[in-house]
Length: 363
Image 1 (tube, one colour):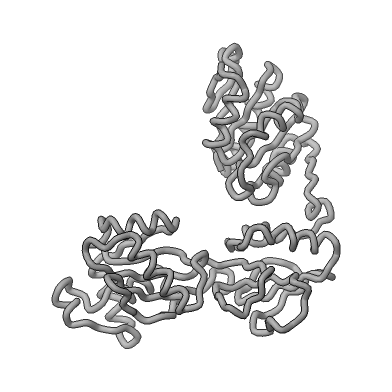
Image 2 (cartoon, one colour):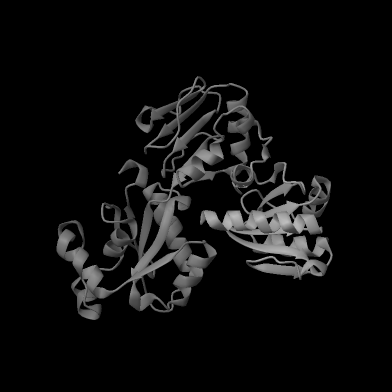
């Protein structure tokens, strides 16, 4: 986690130096000190960036460049400086404020998803300071649903429903989590964790339902929050010169037919001779999906060990030296224990196969 530690006074600069050093020593953070240019001769070690521009301009840069900002200055100043740059809780940096004596550490922005609450507790523990956290779930010692997602490497969607579920949790209303995978959450008086097989859309549960699954279905009612594991790999074969639009259309259609969510896709996988295929790369970029390319020998090994599960094309074998690309590539992308969820299928100039891997916490 890349952290900017910002001070505005001489005493603040000294506390910033100490705080940055302690954070660096944990091995979890990479810190850069920002101190006024007039204090640049202070004996401060580590990465240091003297600044002379107005704080308002500095904050604009920090919001774009850092995962977290630790401010040693008045809370009111930080609120005013941050206001113009706040965009989305999924992308805003963690913002933490400290007084110059290091007595209080306050979580200000992006407490859960951005990690400000965790950073606050970390700094307070290192300095022996008082952590100030005001999010309702933390104050009551209850789990926030977005933290359940983050701690289990799950993706919450739609994000606007997170607030509704958290509101139900803090107001002691019943919330039921149906999951296909083992997740790290303790059931409590008003939070039930059940096997996904027990879920039925016909149950009247006041829309306070969380589904931990990569599945999509028309029967899932509106108002349902999903926590998505990223355990799907899409194997792709395509003709030379295919367009990004054709690739995206094929992926979307294949996922719809397989009943799986795009947010559960871990990667797009193909043979290494496609690593410069512009349409494929553009589609991956537009969909914000990683790409993985495998050599012919790697694909041949999958055919050797799991050939009975895979289709084989004499034409493809003669052309590139392996009897199929998208199925073994999907398996390699999803992991050794993966299964073919959807065998290869042709969509115009694109051939798709989908593999589903196990989830780390269920292994």
